[in-house]
Image (tube, rainbow, N blue to C red):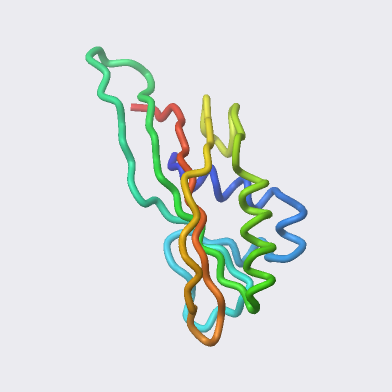
Amino acid sequence: MTGAEIIGALLRDYDALTAIVPVGNIKGGRLPEGALPPLLLVRVVSLIDRQPLKRQGSCRSTARIAVTVRAGSYAQQGQIIELVRTCCTGRTGNIGGGTRVAILSAGLGPDVNGPGNSFEQTQDFRVSFDAPV
């Protein structure tokens, strides 16, 4: 279980977002060559595991997750960023296979020029969850 899987599950299940970004265009790892916007790329930026002194069934993990939006226009980029933030920020509970999940917004990246005249921006999240050890 990773924080990226948790965020990816939320994004793929959010109807308002998938009405604009098809589920098949929400990817982890890296985007395929020549993929056309709109696209979402969900990646792990960093991960911190608490180290329990006694062997237990789970360990609390906190991951920084980046959701990169690649859009066909600046207006669409802003619209998708808002949907991503609405979908994920402040969520708690058992989500996407993760237990005791808590998600906070962790910053918005700069507007950048993407490949093929696309528009890109990244929204980060702090995802805390219990991971099996």
